[in-house]
Image (cartoon, rainbow, N blue to C red; front, side):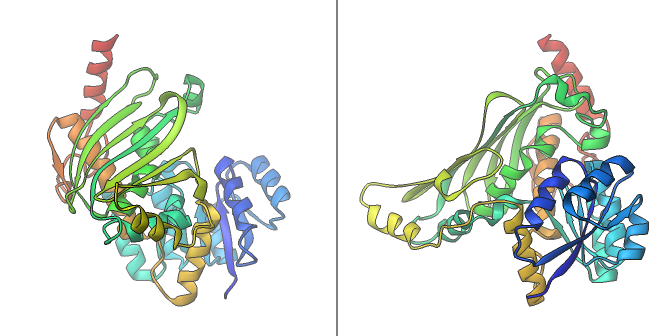
Length: 370
């Protein structure tokens, strides 16, 4: 097993999560450098985590350190340009969500990856718990049967003070509201479990928060395998919870947690007469590791060791980003959106706001509700 030289760009709150989880990878990673425009914040972060390489710009860091992997922990509007710079330097990228603010920006990665051979991966840590792997394996199999009905709820609460940072709650800096910045983890897991989505019908509104984006979205989704799901993304819910429920022919799989899950957060219910097959299949799986950044880091290192594509790589991250774009496009046009509809020339290809349409629709609905 190789040890990989890692650098972190951006030293805010999520960077501390990355650093702490890198320390849990059994010496598979060496945190060699960090970068931030805020010199004081960079110094405190590096002192706390014992990092010797300290840089004010990403360009300097890449030139002097030449890391194997760069973790992007910067605000969303910076992710794609930084990712491309890292890839062009030959460093693999692990970017916090969202991977880009638009499909147009995201598709710029293809050229950068092809030229350098380095790869992009997005932080979708909920895919990497043991129970998630077991559920993905069993859904659609003989024991559980094909998936029929599902729901996916990210019901979180963010008060007005949360949006005091000038880049939060804006299309230009975050690319959207809870659909892009909060619910994306949970519906990424839904897509991971159920496979390709086919069509979305959605609504979005600004119910209470003083933002330019939505603070609530709700979607009805049809999947290629025939399953139908509802997806709700909210920042208005005082009792916070993240939930997925998938009803298959012979089993119901449920996950209820907040920000991260363990095996105990999953519940399996068998249809009458199918208890032995369903419970037996679930209990036969190895169910030890919960979700989390370190689980994804280790999966990334294993892939690099084996010369395999990175997990949560560009292709699957794009499917999740396209799903978010489809929610916005359907909500603001009032029409269903199919996977593959949003291509160059489509108003929602270049931005989740649809060239200002989202802003106008949300302003009208907010006025009507006032």
